[in-house]
Image (cartoon, rainbow, N blue to C red; front, side, top):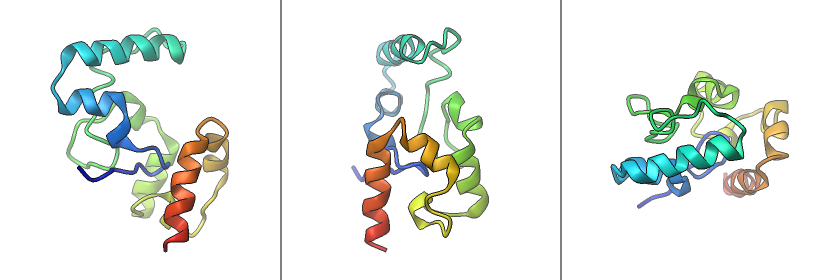
Length: 115
């Protein structure tokens, strides 16, 4: 399977929510929701809120965070494949995110170098 790289540089195809969704594995989705409730101190995370086909899909299912993600909204608005392809790489939104997800920065930096 090809990797799906989100706008922010996270690898959707490596995400446990994506993997469980694609496998139609309800038990795994329940485990993801439980882990994320604790990890992100977010008691309202449900199984339905972690079902995801990747943030790049237009017609697919999206986890609840996709609808509030400023980075995704910006990428969609600008029509870029991901943020590495944006003229404003790295913007303030990304810099703040990269503090929490340095692997995402490494992924986007690698893509950017190949452009």
